[in-house]
Amino acid sequence: MQNIKNITTLFLDIGGVLLSNGWDYNFRKKAAAHFHLDWDVFDDIHESMAPLFEVGKISLDDYLNRVVFYTNRDFTRTEFKDFMYSLSTSDSEMIAFIKKLKSQYKLKIIAVSNESRELNDYRIKTFKLNEIFDFLCLHVMYILANLTLRFFKLHWMALKCP
Image (cartoon, rainbow, N blue to C red; front, side, top):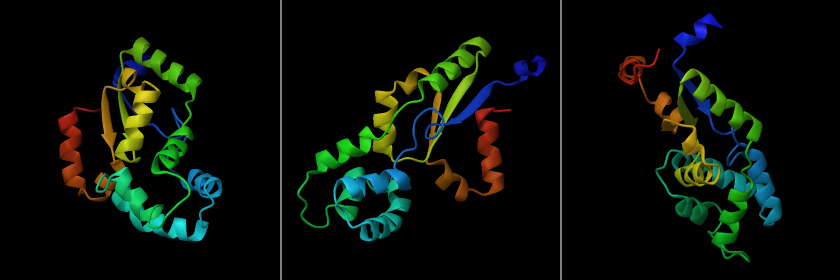
């Protein structure tokens, strides 16, 4: 453990590490079944809207307008959102472990997440993730896919990460 002093920063994904995955395939399947949506139509429209939704180019309400509420439904937008949010669960053992590591080794913790802004906001507030993270890095896959290696290296150096 001598080299642990060289580690100053941890990058952690929120979904699948500290919490359940966000609005993934399995959760969308559950929502489709729960609200009696035609899965094939729901999934096709989701796939066309996901790139915009996941990088914050459209809001959750815009996403739902296009993916779910493009026709009249026998449930409300609030009911659908509440269901989406209810699927998020925490891994309390992992959260406790990360808090212990952060305290013991004085680590900076950076959150990495590709979830939508609204889902991230809900999950961070509900599970008090702001007590763990020093910095949030959202929409990482989109950002990385659109950066050249040189541009990424410049930002990496600016963060002063090892």
